[in-house]
Picture 1: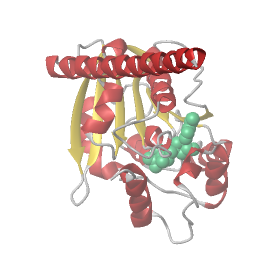
Picture 2: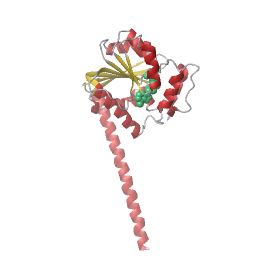
Picture 3: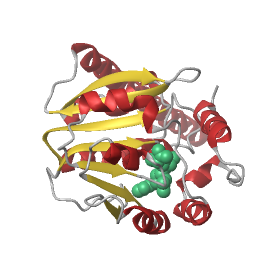
Picture 4: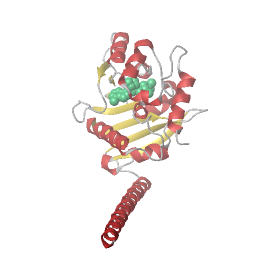
Length: 268
Ligand SMILES: C[S@@+](CC[C@H](N)C(=O)[O-])C[C@H]1O[C@@H](n2cnc3c(N)ncnc32)[C@H](O)[C@@H]1O
């Protein structure tokens, strides 16, 4: 149970990966840029979780063909090529692996005029505020969490990392822009990251896939969170505060015990 996300990543890869591609030694390798550079120097095309066909009906409801679209962590997925063929011509593809960006640019630049490929780290995006109508990611935020052992208790460091990325996503989105996230993460694990009043967006979730469900989240900037999402956020905050207070109490108690021992020592 504790390792469910890691397990799912591995299972998903095993089901989809081409036979020449070796799995990494450890799940944490998915966090290393060197792992991706090395992988992309050998692998030509691969779609994580699912290809565009399986969820294009959802995307077509949410994106207009004239929209300016930013893809985060594009890898060598065929998604943007298929989107282009479906009329979404204004796509900026980004990844922090220069190897995959170079490969994709060589493969696609002539074939798909208007589509661009740029090296960009999602932890440090340099786009102007309010540039894009849509920001889209598939499996990229998952790659930032693969080292976590217990999905119910994500480390504070990872929480901050995700918050940093989402803050940047929100900034580069236009006032009525959408962030779309495609992932294997179920709502009880992923919504606490997305459904937060600080981002000033609503969260809608759907799923697709037959034997295995994938999740499709749409964050609409400028829309309010539902009452249910706000209530859940308040409950999470209250629980955190309670845990913090209990930790404080434990520290005070330990300090008191120390003093007692110290006084006992003097009496002796
Ligand atoms: C699981 S793969 C998903 C690839 C592609 N989106 C797909 O659906 O097949 C994660 C991708 O995120 C990229 N990535 C990981 N961390 C990143 C970061 N900090 N900034 C930009 N890209 C990152 C990796 O290079 C890799 O291409």
